[in-house]
Length: 320
Image (cartoon, rainbow, N blue to C red):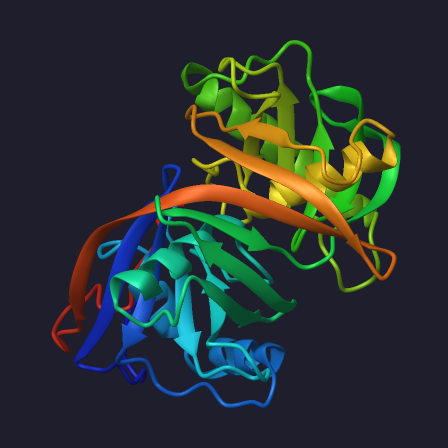
């Protein structure tokens, strides 16, 4: 927890927003340059040399475990406005759907958008987004794919269950549990159950070597009339997604398409456990499925984070 031996700037400028309830903190100034010719290389450099800043920016006492950070960098691809590296209380994300929507609204708030369409580079590929006049953001994600359907696993304390494995910018295990209602009043049980599932997934190694299924997504019937499904998503850092999860919705679209339950272009309306909603659909390009996710973000603050050398908690900490 002590920050001795680490270099901290005196201040870092951030813009906070929430996307359908899930917070994003965009770093706009004050962060040291991340080296590398690709976004993957820059993410690796950030992890190797500036990981203490990740913790200091998103964890307590300046943030909390649900905050997702987004570091803006120069672009790496021609035609892109910027690069972005997403991170949370425990590490780094390849892509973050709610965070991408928050980044677009932040760039608009700062007057950095050139028109309403923008391309942004992420460690898993470039994504396109469009900001509508009413503030709605629609982004075109990296290709999604269904890895496997009807996977049978045995989870200690839960017994046997069946789910699907899919990629939507991050890896997901998607399942439905009949005896567990997706309500906030059941939050402790939802977190315990999904954590047990993810622990078992770590042991099984269902995806390629070096890859990890770090998100677990539960589904049930919606509570909103304008939704097709309700979900609960366990994030890598042990928190749950307050939004319907952009990469999780992308993974769900790939699964539905693989099952023959969703055609290209057909809308899917995903409700979160907090009652917020994304709308998603698929297009097809060069034989790949491209998810499109639509939602709204709202700016909540512009802040200067300060790093007093005498502060015992300058480097941040996680309550978990």
